[in-house]
Image (cartoon, rainbow, N blue to C red; front, side, top):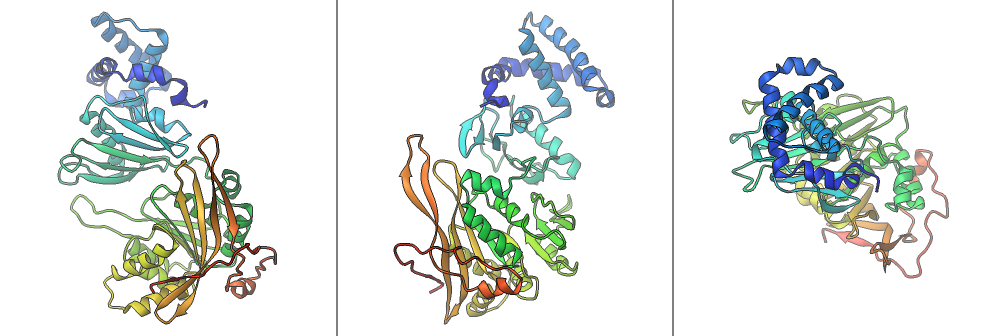
Length: 447
C-alpha cells in the first residue's frame, strides 16, 4: 500500500523515538524562544525550513549528534508541523487510507485502516505535548479544555471530528479520537463497488429518496451511517431546498440549495448552548423541502417525527441502534426524553406514521461495512408496529483471505408504500423484488 505511514514506518518510528522527541522538543523550544511567533507566521515554508535547519544544526552540534540527510529532513518537517500544523498527527491526517486516529496517551497511537485497528509508528513526548496539539485545534473555536471542562468535541479545518478527554477523567490520558473527514465523499457507485449495498438496493433507495419517503439510517458506532446518509442525500433533486442539522458538520451535499446548521456547546460561562432540538424547531421556520438530521440521540426525535408528520416529507436521519427492531424502540425512548407525557400508543402511532423505511448498516468482523437490512415500517396493529424486511444480507462463509462471503437478497415482498411513490411520479419496476425460495416472516415491534 503506497501510503505515507506504510512507506516510511521505520523512518517515522525513528523520528518519534524518545531520544529524537527530546531533540525535536529542544529545537522547537529554542526556535520559539529566539524567534518572534509573528515572524514565523510570515515566513514561507521554504524560509521556515531553512530557519529551523539552523537551529537543528546547533542543537545536534551541542549534543555531538549526526543524522542521515533523510532523517534530518524529516526532523525539520516534524518541527514545521509543530509550528504550523498538528505535530505528530500531521502524517496520519495526510494518509487517506486512515479513517480514524486514536491517541491513547503519549506512548500509544492507534489508527483504523480498511476497518482494521493497528498501531501507528508515532508517539508524543508527554501528556503536555498532546494537550498543546489539542489546544491548537480548539483555540480558534473559542473552546477550552482543562480540569473544569475535561471533555471537548471539536472540528478540524478539514471537517474531521475530534473528541478529547483529559485527566482526572482519563486515567492514562489525555485521550484523543479523530474521525477523519473524507476529502472526496464516497458516492453510490463506490458503495456498490465496495459491496456495502447491491446495485439493486442502490436503485431502490434512490427511488425511495426521490419519492420523498422518510428514511432512518441505523447502525452501531463506526458502521458507516454518516457515509450512507451522505449518499442517500445525493439522491435528492437539486431544485429542492435542503437544511442539514448536525452536531459537527460532516455531510457533503453537492446540491445548490443547501443550508447547513451546526449545534453550539456552552460558552466559557456555561451558557449560550444551542442543541439539535433548537435547530430542528428553527429549521421548520426556514421553508425546507427536506430536513436532514445528522443523528438523533435525544428529545429532538419528537420534533423530527412531528416534522415528518406535518408535511416535511423526504426527511433523513441516523440513529445508533443494534438493528431495525431496536431502532423503533430507541426512537420511542428518545421521544420520552423530550419530557412529554405522551402515552406509548400515541408515540408508536407517530413513529409508524412518520418513518417509512429503516436502512440498517453494520461493520462486519472483517472490517467491511454492509447494509444488512432494508426494512419497511408498515402500520400499527393494536399496540404493535408492524414492519417488513425488503432486503437482507445472507452469509455464505469466509474466503481464503478471511473476508466474509455475503449476498444481498430481496425478500420477495413488495412494500406497501408503492402507491405513495407513484404519487410522486416514481414507479418501482416489477422485477425489483424477486421471490426467495422460502417465505419470509414479517416482524412486529413493541409486541
